[in-house]
Image (cartoon, rainbow, N blue to C red; front, side, top):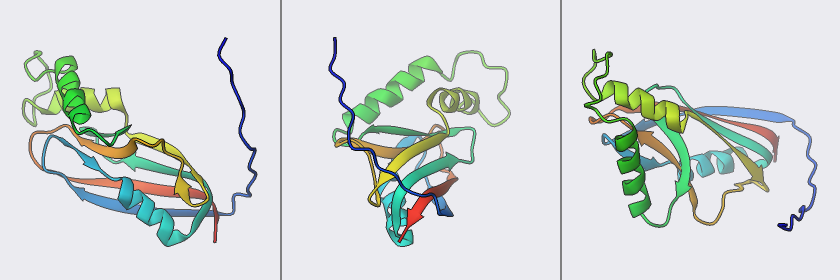
Length: 154
């Protein structure tokens, strides 16, 4: 049986809510690291204890938390998504081009919302984790991400 240990219990009063919109210019099908932008938002508002969420306002792009050390991980993830939702799968919806419907499927698989605990003003990410906007379309797009922090602030 695995050993499970509980860490320190921290209590904070939820007193504040801050939001912003990040505009991200993508280069086309790729992973864009948004970790520093979200961390900058938290620093600017003086975040303390709470939770930060990121919401993608699009249906052909998505969000993920993934390894930020080896870029080959993102290459392999993109390859896996292409295998799961290839452009030549006989999609019915094709009004916006052959990459549109597979992009919707990929966004559904990976999700459009992230929630990360914030402890002492910093995201409680693991050592090798980063936040990414995943552009599933072939061409560059301007994407909007709504970022919200709920918790206490200095």
